[in-house]
Amino acid sequence: MNEVRLKNIATYSKNPLNDEMGLGELYKKYSQGLKAYILSKFRNADHEEVIQTVFLKMAQRSNLEKIEHPKGYLYRAVDHVVYNDNRRRQVQNKYLEEISGEGQFFDELNPERIAAGKEELSLITHAIKQMSPEKQRLLILYRISGLSYAAIARTIKIPETTVQRHIGDAIRELDEIICLMKNENDHEHSDI
Image (cartoon, rainbow, N blue to C red; front, side, top):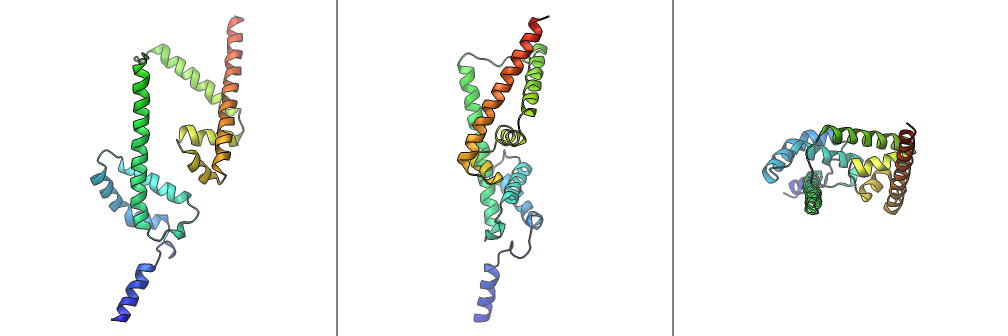
């Protein structure tokens, strides 16, 4: 009986990630269960997007071998991803409600608004290209990918306060470049 008990203890104490099980193996083993879990618990969540995000976050970890219970970790990570996504959506909806409550209404798209939007996007794209690659990367991670300061700090392995400072600097520099470009455009149009 003691032999069986010791065998069971050894089985439970094994860390699957120490036994050369990579993310691909974890994905094969748990993705269907995660999908069923997401569909049953979070009916409105995009299960494929959530699973992809969870495994992306796992891939960014440098200490995967320290995860003792990968299955539990994955299910908790799913909960966090869905809750964070819902929270972000609530903040966006609240912001849109506040704006519309202040008398600013989102009117329908018309050709003028579309053209102005394309021009603004082009201006921002050119401004970003004038920045250093490091600042470009930080802006993309923060503004486009929507990562928090802490997530960016973990990704690029620098302190969170440094990330905050660099992003603040990058946003100020971007604003200055855009202002200069707009002034140049205004001067070109006034000369005509």
